[in-house]
Length: 166
Image (cartoon, rainbow, N blue to C red):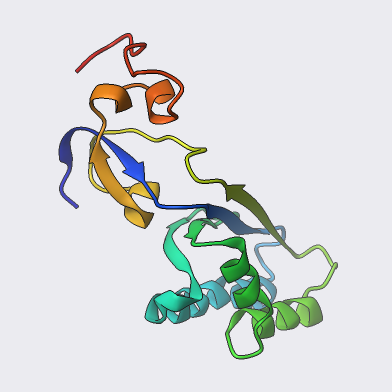
């Protein structure tokens, strides 16, 4: 992706959800335990990508040997929850399979964190970056004028408190 020169900020209309989800492989040699957990997420992402009405706005995967994780942006908690409990989608069968195969035996760990973000209760800045993170889930706008500072982007100042102007 090509960098956008200058300073930009992400803007998204209304409330949204940031959802972090990942796994940790505790016993690398037990591939038959962790590989099904690892391979379930791409199926879910493909399903979510085909149907924007399910509510996923953007997802980014970060890989490491033991602890891959994803940062996801969702339209609402209601969308996220509806997907997680739906009998018609990939998550619930994967969750049931994990509990049956791994449960609490300690071979593989899974985790998630959910953050409900009220409208206007966030700020971001991207300097000479391609669209990234929330900028891919929402829209990018120039970080100028009242929006040149973090306080300004949060509507807590007129933006003049930015010590370095560009």
